[in-house]
Structures are given as C-alpha cells and as structure tokens.
Length: 303
Length: 243
View 1 (cartoon, rainbow over the protein chains, first blue to last red):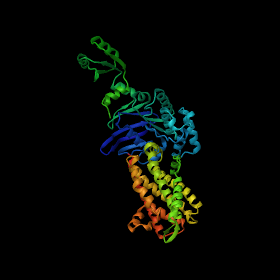
View 2 (view 1 turned 180 degrees about the vertical axis):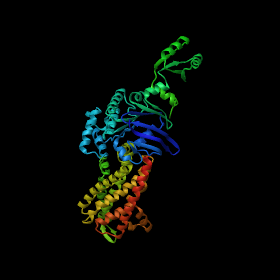
View 3 (view 1 turned 120 degrees about the vertical axis):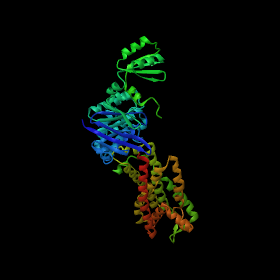
View 4 (view 1 turned 30 degrees about the horizontal axis):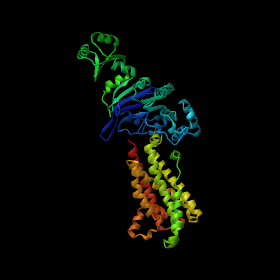
C-alpha cells in the first residue's frame, strides 16, 4: 500500500504552547484514517497542517508526495476539505454554493454545473438546489459541505467532525456516503469525538493527547489489546470486591461509585463475582473504543 | 483568478443616493448663499466646485466601507476566507480580491455620481474621461487602507474609530466642501497629508481640465500610499488569519 500522507517528527507550536509534539504517522491510499482525542489534543491543528492552511513549525509533512510548505496550491487542488464550522455562503443557493466554489479550482463552468448536480443527487439534496443556506437543516448543511469538498473530485477527503450535532438518521446517511466514497477509492481522513463513528468507519486511527500520539492501529485490535473483549460494570463495589479483583489480577478501574472490570472472559468473571458478593447493580457489555479512549486519556474534563 | 473572488459578493445595493442629495442640498441650496468660490485663482460656481468633491467622497466611502464592514463580515461571521483558502487560492489572493472588489465598488459608485455630474453640466471633456481611472486607483488606496483596520480590530464595533477619526475629518477637510486656501497654512499642510485631499484635487482638476504640478505630486502620493498600505494590509491579514 502506498502512503498518501506522511508525517515525520511533525511539530507545531503557538508561542509557548506545543500543539503538536513531534508526531509520526502515515495514511495509506484508499483507507479511512481517524484522528481521535480530547479537545486540545492537537487533531484539528494536524488536519489544518495537512490542508496547508496552517504552517508547519518543524518536521516533515508530505501529502500525495508533495511537501506542504513548498506546494500548497498543488496539494489543495487534489484534496477536499469539509471543515467543522459551517462556512457556506448564506447569500447563495445550494447549487450556487457549489458552482462558485468550483471557480476557485479554475473549473470550467459546464463541468462545475454537471458535477454540482451529480453531487446534490449523491447527497440527497437534489430538491434543495435552489434553496438558500439559512433555510437548510443542520444535516443538510453538513451534507452540502461534504458535497462541496467533493467538487474537485479529490483524492483525499478530509472531514473535521462530520456528524457533530446531527440526529441519528442524518449521521447514518453521512456514514453510508463516507463508506461509498471509500469503496470508490477515495482516501478519507476524519476527526471525531464519537467513538462509535470511529469504530464504524476507520480502518486505522490514532488517539492523540497533548500533541502526542498515544496509540495507533485498527480499532478492533486496539480494543482487544488495551481493554480486552468485554467490560463488567459494577455499582458501589465493596472493599472486599476490590481486594478480590486485585488478588485475581483483573484489570479494573474505579470511577466514583463504579468499578469497571476489563476482561476477555466476561461470563466466567461475572459468574464468580455474582456468586461471591452481593451486588446491587452490574452490567456486562462488549468493550468499545470509548473504553480504550477513556483508559488512555483519562476521565478529567478538558475545558 | 482573483477576479473570481468578486463574484462571491453580489448582494449589495450601493448607497449612491447620498451624494446626489448632497449635490442638491449643498450645491443648489447652500450654493445660492455662497455664489462663487475662488479655486486656484479662478472664480467658480459653488455647485461646480462641490461636484468633484462628491465624486471623491463616493470613492472613499465605497471602498472604505466595503473593505471594513463588508470584508469583516465575510472574514469573521461568514468564514468565507476560511472556505476559500481551503481551495488552491492563498490568503494573499483573497485579500487582493477583496481590495480589487473594494476599488471596483468605488468605480461603480463614482461612475453613478459622475454621470449625474455630467448630466448637470458640472464637468467637462476631455478631463472627465480620466476620472474613472483615478476613481479605481484611489479606490485601491482606500480599500488597502481599510483592510489594515480590518486586520487589526478586535471586533466590529471598533470600526467606529477609523470612521470618526479618519473618514469624517477627511470628508470635511479633504478639499471637498470648501477650497483649502481659506485654511491657515498649517491647516493646508495637514490637509495635504490626507489621502482624500489628493483624490479630490485630482478629480477636481480633471473635471476643470486644469492639470497642475500639484496633481503629479498627488498621483505619486496615491501610488505610493496604495503600494505601502497594500503590503502592510496583506502582512497584517496573514498574521491575523494564518495560525
């Protein structure tokens, strides 16, 4: 597999703040690659450096074989960017937003018109072609922003929190579209706070914190390696139970009034605990990426 | 490529009625009281003296308004600049486009005022043919100057400062409503530091077909200030937006 994005010892500082701290990663052609991390972890900064809109402080960053510092125009012509913020032009209709954007790529009018119509169809916005932006719902705006990012038929699609604030129906439509694009060979780069989204979409991902990459890998493997198969959640654990967990050498974590037990053998462990202790509340579930995320980045708030 | 940027902004209704009201109120109304003024040794009807000043004011206001409030709204509220720099265009292209657009608005609005002035017989050939070029050139100057403020203000309310401290004094003392020769010499010198004074002089002398040596200095002033403010504004905008 060929790497379409390569970062080596990539660093970004704002005055005294180190936003991205000497990170290395590679994104392969055709995969969906995720950046996860709490607020302020450095994921959006990394994305912005890839998009050539934020200068690299130090290190090497190559997109499609070109250096971001030397060839920003060439790189930007080949990538599609769907930002987190809605920056559609409120004065234009849905269709005009796409065709105007196309002009910045020096695209001939007829081609732009055809592509815009095709993309509105693809994103289920065909009937809305002549509607003004303020009259669209949140989900429609997101879909339009993604359609806009696809106007130049990019080789890499960059999505910054594509489904934040959307209802479940709208999220699933966007997920379907991302998968469809991936099957057409588009490399997709995504940042998200939703672990289920990352688990659903990403072939590989990194979890970042304080400018560094904590882990990298495919989500299922990460869950398996870091958490195990399943999680048992128990409310108000007694001292004896905690001691028992320690003696048995079970991986566990105490959070306020709950204890989380991470294990490959949920059934057996749960049966043992149930027969030995009186438990008011317990739940068994499959381990998720959220467990990995919280275990690695901690539970403290990031304001 | 930058020309494309201009098409992004299509929704405006130029406030071109204002200079026309001035022409009627000040020129016809006030002019009766004043009669004639002395300009460069010649007696001239007040309304004829005033007309070029109104063209200059419309140039200044159009570009300055567009590249302060207009650009700030696109930059800060609509995030249009962010959207454009995600495409092959750079921030320099965007700012250049904004400034060209500001100058274009100066040209459009001043052409409307010029048309009224011509119909009223207040300007004469062949000098007036050059006025649109001067309008665009000085439009670039005011647009670049405005862009500097757009790059440094913390919020949209702060535009009150350049408007009250720069635009209003220029509007009143830029050789627009009375000949500068009535001012004491320090006042005349101060007025010559203002961009609008040179704009007004150039347009007035062109409408009267009397090119003076001071106009060459004026032209040089405009060219120099445009270049300086352009580069300063692009630099400050990069500093504000590229992080």
